[in-house]
Image (cartoon, rainbow over all chains, first blue to last red; front, side):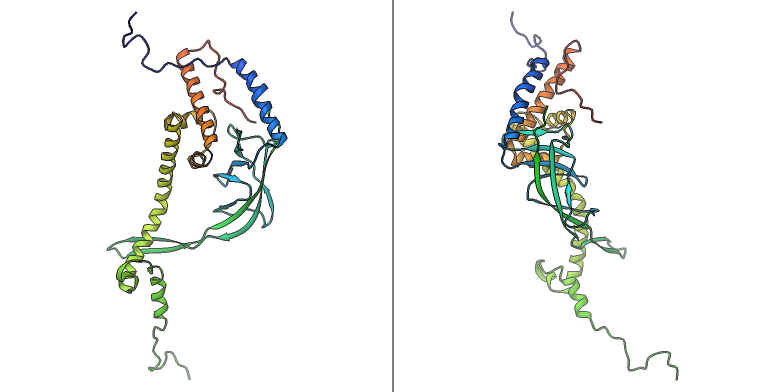
Length: 157
Length: 149
């Protein structure tokens, strides 16, 4: 039969997805075990993580510095554990959290290095011809953290 | 004897005019033309510069977000997905990464971004099947909502 413009639907044909039961078995058997094996064998290089901290998301690795624009209630030199990890990745595998990863799976440690104020930012308002100008100098407190380590443990299921 | 006002030879004179002028000129030193040297011209330029910097701090957030969106759009088109499909499917799969981090991953972690694009594509197709199939067929794996306690 000849094909007309109405033989098939106007939207693109959706390919058939694999059976969910079979796919769950494949995933559990092959993928999870392989990744668990790689983690316990230590076959990963540098790990990076995406962490939600101070109402911002940061993409961090070990030994890097983070500066946040607020006060942290911890003294300089305190070790801090950053929970709320959204994503962890290495060269060959990535663990994507929905939305967060478990606390028994990832551990991110950081140290508070310094607590200072920001450079003096100038806020100025001015209306012309109205003799109105206001100048304000704003200094925000800032904290600098150094990310020490990112560790993952082979407890996937 | 009680003295209420100073004697006539004691006048109050401005002695630190130099430093008051320098306070303004130090912000104008990198300007072009006479406004980096002459106080009268510098005052106006410095005032406009301050006002513009305050307004720019609010615009910067919008500009950066538009930049991130452009970069994510370019990266997802490389993997065959459009930006609205990518973002909406990521959100439906309960992956709460913001645009800043997605743009950084697209630049520095291409393999991770490819896996995220594949996740979004799979979720998209499960959504199509759920919409077109109308029940009596197994729900997709990636469409299941994860409940935390």
